[in-house]
Amino acid sequence: MYSITARFNQIVFFTSWTLVILSLLNQGTAYFFKTGKPTVDLKILSADKFQHYKATYYNGGVTDWDQVTFKFSLEADFEPVYNWNLKQLFLYVNVHHEHQQKGYESDCVIYDKIISRPDDPSSWSTSSKLVLKNQRAEYPLKDIHKQLRNATVNFEVWIEVMPYVGYIRREKLGDFEYKMPQQYN
Amino acid sequence: MAEGQSDTFWKSLYIYFNEMDFESQLFVKKIYKIIILTVAIISFIIAFFLERFSVCVYSTIGSSVLCILVLAPAWPIWKKNQPNWQQGNQQKQK
Image 1 (cartoon, rainbow over the protein chains, first blue to last red):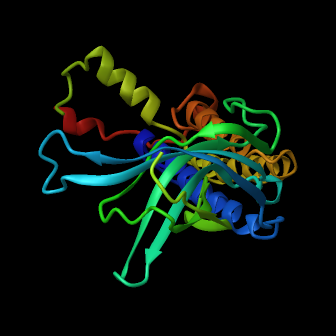
Image 2: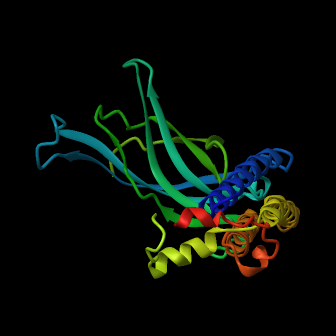
């Protein structure tokens, strides 16, 4: 404490230590809050532009594939997940389909959205419920093995929980099965 | 530095803010921890009920900035109890 730099140094690093300990307490007390599982309901409305596409440029060896764009409606309530350690949620809809004989399975993300807390000043919505009606998927589902006709695909709704302090974890909220059309349309 | 050489303005300003009494050094050493810890604990409890952790972080950093401005430089408040220096040996200057 005998020089100005020594006093400055001690105050700054003492503050840093208190902030570190407060952040750990922040993460620790968040576990005592309600951390339940949100409810979600997904309905596939239509499978549009389900066709056999051909490549028009060199695509690394892939010359043709099946492609489909979905339209769906989604309702969800995220109230059980909100606590003071939560910064935002990353919601994404994943399509999973397997082919038993050929022995492959594939995952494809067709829609994603960032959801921040409703009491945050920078968020888009003011309620904790999410309602999407007749929403078109952002990314199409492609299959280079061309096995999508009459296939059973699985729609999974996932959530990635991003806190202010702590680990990022993923949770699966629901599974919904859907049968693809028999022919291209 | 040899005697008789004058300091520049910035150097003498640094020396002015650098030198602090021993008693006020003890006082500063105790009080900055008390200030920052009480502000941190109270704002943590307030932020817990408001469910906003940013309140806690901003108030802790603000209290530390306040401490730096008031306690780190040697303002005249911290120069009140000067030590009693002994008389110099006059014969050496010849």
